[in-house]
Length: 73
Image (cartoon, rainbow, N blue to C red; front, top):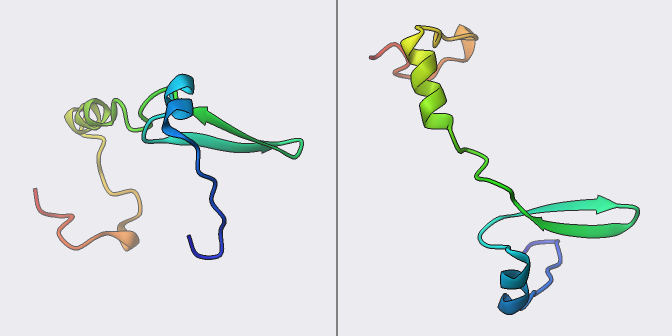
């Protein structure tokens, strides 16, 4: 873990609170909070990108930062 430190949390406790592969970690008033993520952060991205492409609103905004092959369709 490099210069970080880790805490092992037993799997039964993680299951009881609904934590799976990802978690939200925050610090509030010197207390570390670990919460389950409500949804997949990328949920709906595929549908949204298809809608943007259908509306032909997917032009390169910053052409100076284009990637190789961006002109290929």
